[in-house]
Image (cartoon, rainbow, N blue to C red):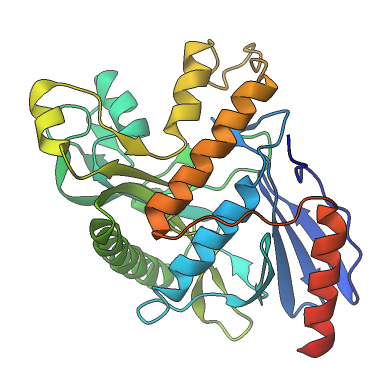
Length: 317
């Protein structure tokens, strides 16, 4: 099995600090740049799994950077360069403390809530009579608070965001506008690949000059759910499961092994064989979403590769 990145401890020139999230590690360079390392950690139900998934970080980083390039004409983003398959470098931003989740279909978390009899999600009404994976009359924005590693993201309404002054009213208007524009573009890009963008989340930050920009990942299988368009309606009509591209297959495996991140539940053991299948599934996701053949990065010494590539970019910028 190929080597994985589960933790990094770089010390780059002019490094001020490092923030370690669930799957990404962000190095602050001179309060000017952020060097974001996409690790191979796997998070599900807000819990980081004990073992890394080979090439997962590279896959997510490369999908995200390609999607940022494909949307920068409608929403500005933080990205400057990608000197390594697992690295994105961009402008230092102050992140907003919420994730902008947008749902075109009643799937995943929304469907689980619906099955419990709930018809309100983040202050929004979900129509009666819907089946799992039905399309909403129009996409709904269901924000979530951003959790630290080990904590759970929590649903929050627009009203509570403003009431608690998490985001100003003026900034929230921009976040909603950007979220809808990105989801529309993502929907169009997915359609060209024979896919349906079901739901996704976006994260935003402010640059030093106060500009709101898209940060972190976009339209990856970790942050998004895709269905295959071909046969979607037939599967809905017959009550069959939708054929999908996302990490939902990992969540379902965990659920089948009695784990949903709840107190007292133990993370099931992932065998090397299972981890290999997860890695292969991520490669399939990459190729389906981007239409490009996945090219594996060099893994004989990943840390040295990353450090060399980042230092070379810094010297030549």
